[in-house]
Image (cartoon, rainbow, N blue to C red):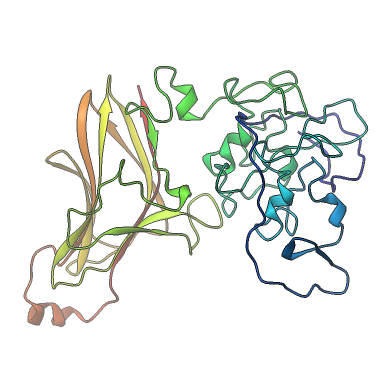
Amino acid sequence: TSGAPTPTSEPITTTATTTSTTTTEKTTTVAPTIEFVECPGDMFSVEGLPGCCVEEPSYLGDGACDPRAPYNTEACAFDLGDCCRETCNPDSAYGCKTKEGGDFGPFGFFCIDPRFGNIDEKRCQVENLEWIGDGGCDVGEGYNTPECGWDGGDCCEETCDNEYSFYPCGANQAYDCRDPSVANKESTSDSPFSFQDGFESGVIDPLRWDVDDGDARWKIDDNKAAAGGDYYIAARSEDISPEYGTARLKHVIESMGGGVLSFDIQALVQIPFDDVIIMIDDDIVAEFSSATAGWERKALDISTGPHLVQWIHRKNPSNMPEADLTLFGYPDEGVTMIDNIAFQPS
C-alpha cells in the first residue's frame, strides 16, 4: 500500500491496496465516562464526550476511520465508532464502506476498541495506520504481525472483509496468510491444535492457562520495551515471598501430529538466587541461570499427543540457607517475562 495518511475529510489520490477483518453485527458506540477536560486553544470540545479534544469535531463519527490520536482514543470513543466495523455507523457521511475509485480514501479499520479489536496499539508501530484493514495485504515493515492484527485481517482470504474494505480483497496485493488461526486449516483460533497466548486481551485466561500451582502467580505486564516493538503486553512472574519457591505458568498442548512451540522470554535472574526452567511433561528442555540480553526468541519441538508445558521461575532453586546466600550479596528480586507464545502444528 502507498500514499500519505490524511484526515478522513480530505480527498487524496492513490494507487495502492490493502484489506480488512471480519465483521459481525452492528453494536452501538457508547461514549466512555470521562471527566470534562478544558481543551487547548486550537482544539474543540465535543458534546457528549467531555474528555475529547480535537481540531475537527466533524471527523468523529463520519464513517471513515481517523486512526491516530486524538480521534481514535477512548476519550473520543475511538473516532466515535469509525475505526471498528462493529461500531461504524452505516448512515454516516462516508457510510463505513468507501471504495477505491471514489473521491476519498483510502480508509482502513485500525480497531483498538478492546471490545472488538485484536490490535496491540502500543506494539503496532507502523507508518501508515490507514493501511490496516483496508483490504490489501501489506507484507512488510510490521503490518502482517499479531501486534497489528495480521494487517487488520487483510492477509487471509478468510478474514479479509470485502464488504467494508476500501480495496478488493486479494486483488492488487496477494494474500500472505500468516495468522495461525487461519493458516492451519485443520484448526481455528479456539482449537486445541493451534494457539496464541492471548495476553493482548490484558488478562491471563484461566481457561487456557494455570498460574496457581506455585508459591506465586503470574500477571499481565505492559510497561517496558519488548521484542519486536516499543512495548509489550506479556506475562510476568510475581514476587515469591518465601525464602525459596516457584511461580509456574502452565499450558496443555494437544498436538495431532507434532509442531513447534515458540515464545519470547526475558529472564532477569542470577544463580544462586533464581533461575528459569521450561519443562515439557517431566523433562527440562531449556534453562536460564543468568539474565538474558533483553528479549530472546525460543522455539521447541513438540511431539504428537498432549503435553504439559511449564515456564517456571524458581527462587533459590537449590534451597540454599539464607546465611549462605548473603555471601553472594543481595540482588533485586528476579523476574521472568514471557510473550508471543504460539504453537504451529507441523
